[in-house]
Image 1 (cartoon, rainbow, N blue to C red):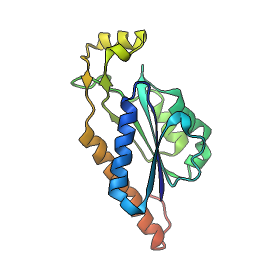
Image 2 (image 1 turned 30 degrees about the horizontal axis):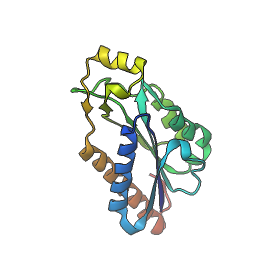
Image 3 (image 1 turned 180 degrees about the horizontal axis):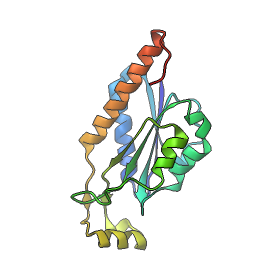
Image 4 (image 1 turned 45 degrees about the horizontal axis):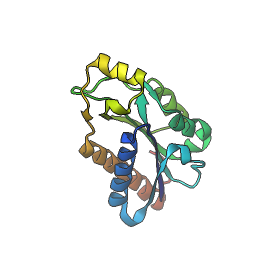
Length: 178
């Protein structure tokens, strides 16, 4: 089984989440899967993969263009794969903003994704552009790393269990999709 974890990250935080997802999947699935972690802008094809995870940092409520492009450019083939989406962005305690990114509902439908999760991100004002700093200031969020690594690994474990179950069904002659 071949798995792609692709992520768009403006300041590196979402990329680090993608790397952790890749490590966790590789650990869970061991010899049963090959896991590739790629930057979204480097993905030219998804056809060779059985499972595709696409993630993006969320800025001003939207996914980054490179992640949206993966879904947009590979819509038909993604519908034949096991696909999950993840977002990174809410910051603070409690995480703000609390709502899902604006474009995720459409991306879920067009990719045929089986699920979507939002992970808290990290904030370092020195890396942000002016509009991003203005939003963070308005939300009164302090700089910090709000990522929950245990939740990231747990989600990867859920995906590993789901693809293992699906693979077992295929091998035993029950080639049905969950």
